[in-house]
Each structure stands twice: as structure tokens, then as C-alpha cells.
Length: 287
Image 1 (cartoon, rainbow, N blue to C red):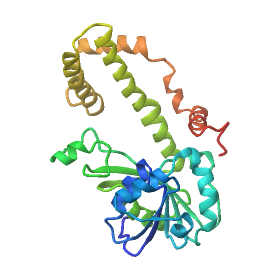
Image 2: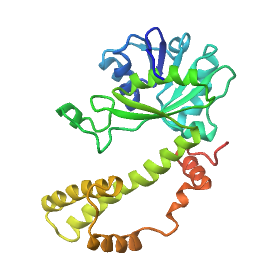
Image 3: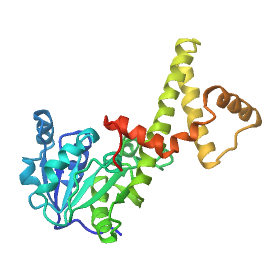
């Protein structure tokens, strides 16, 4: 589905933010015409530090084929209200997270296409071969990653144009997987933040409890824990080396002690709506 972005004009709004800098660095290596807009003085300094010129928002979006809103979710509604009315017919508004689109916060206008694309980050199962790939745990620098995207209109030609940009802004990209906006919202936040990131934080708390309360020397705890985290994920997600009978008993005890029986409620629409409303600091989603 992908094609070249040569000849495209792209605007990055929020180019000096965490994701904005990553996206801008990658797009600067392409043959596209790219404008970098950033309102905050600190963000403008970061854009200039990576050797790029700062443009005003109005200048950046005036002739843009694709406008990337690399700003925090909580301000996407306000930023889209400013940007979208200035766009030319047929332009693509590309957001990096699905929450605002799912909640109905983006400014709507006929003739404008809306796409959301989120990086998957390099997989724990990625076969890294260079020091640069090992160092790139977030993605977008050296380690290949997937991306998951949604185009609200469902137009395949729009998806093809957007995919070309997505592959460059998150490069190196293995593949872009297309889903609906709601499915992308289920993936992020429910699957990866509500569940996976929460479990990651819980693992950290368990390690600290082992060291500070149980008194196990940190090097010993980290050595055994980090290795077993890898084994646990490989066994559970890929069936590499099945857990022993004794391990299954301990796992069952742990589930009874830690996991609520109704934990799968996090996949209910009502819980998803509540989570996203809290993330965006709004009373409710307007779907």
C-alpha cells in the first residue's frame, strides 16, 4: 500500500515536543517539503538544536498535503480548531494517538481526511543485530517497529498516501496495520497502557519490595528477575518453553492473590470511555 512521499508538503505542528522531534528528525531525511511549527520558546530551541528552521503554524499548514499534529492529547481539540480551518481541500490531518479522535474532540470539516497512526515500538522479540538497535528501545531511530493506523473515512487511497508518511516518520517501519479508530483505542490505551504498562509498573514495584522489604541483594534480585521476565513473556506469549507444573501452581496462587476475577471489564465500551475521558480530562467522550 505504501508509496513515496517525494513531492508532498508536510507540516509538523508541535515539532519541538518529545514525539515532534523524533518525527521531524526522520522527515528531514526525506525528499518531502517539510515545515516545522512550534509555539513554545523551549520547543523552538529544540527544533533549532537539531538543525531545523521554525515556521509559524499558518505558514506551515498553508500548502500542506499532510499536517501532523504532534501535540499532547489534551490540547488536540484546541489545536485542531486553529489548524483545520486553514487547510486546503483534501489535506490529511494525522494524529499520533487515537484518544481525541475516539472522543470526538477533533475539529471537523468537510473535505479533510483524518488519520491516526501510533508506533508499536520495537518488539521484545525483535532480532537486534547492532548496538544502535539494542539502544533504540523506543523506536524511530535504528530498531525496526510496526505501526498501527486508522483512517476515519476508510478511503484506501487516503490510507496509501498516509502510509507513505507513516513509514517515514516512524522509520524504520516493518509494516503498517490498518484498523478502525475504535480498535486503535482498544489497543491504546486498553491493551498497552491500562494493562501492559500497568503490569510493567507492577513488576518494578515487586522488584523494589523484594529488595527493600525482603532484603534480597539488588544485584541478585535483578539478575534473576530480568531473566525470568524474558522467559515468562516468551513462554506465555509464544509457548517457547512451557511452564513447569510447580510454576503453574505458583502462577495460580498469584492470580488469586493479585488479579480481580472481573478484570476483563477493562474491555467494556463504558470502561474504555471512562479511561479516555480521564486521560483527556473531560467529563465524557462525545462519540
